[in-house]
Length: 222
Figure (cartoon, one colour):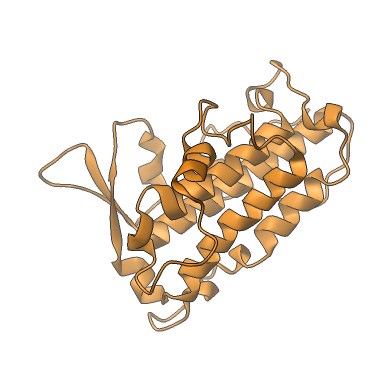
């Protein structure tokens, strides 16, 4: 991701992948796969416990959680974008009974999951279009930390713990987007590994950065 940008630079230059690359590379990996290929799971590797379909569903759900469900209108100070999900749909997208995934009773078809991935990434692009590099690094959003992700602090400089409430942390807007990018490529890499486990070819080269660059991260392939 670009490093040498002035505070006045448009935020879209800080995260150019959100405009089209993140959707395009994910769609290219799953388009044309059979239902059996999409649903292949194995306990042979830690990264193959979720199928390709479920990896993609998790990616799509995460964008709605971070760009809408958690902080709502606070992320859109210039006005809410059109096409936001209703409260009922937001629940199905972000808080279903399926672990951190879209509600599989509603969003199972791979084409529908891709639509939701595109919709969530578009929300991110809307935020970026109304921010500068400086505002991305200055705006903070409150979050609760129960110690689940100790490795988080080794990656994100725009993250601070509240001095009065130990379980309260603050994300800069830049950190939120960096997290979404790192999550996206991590699960895209998982999708590629699951394809390789089935003897299928992959469509792109995923950069090994972010969470995957942490010491001890499992980068194994079949």
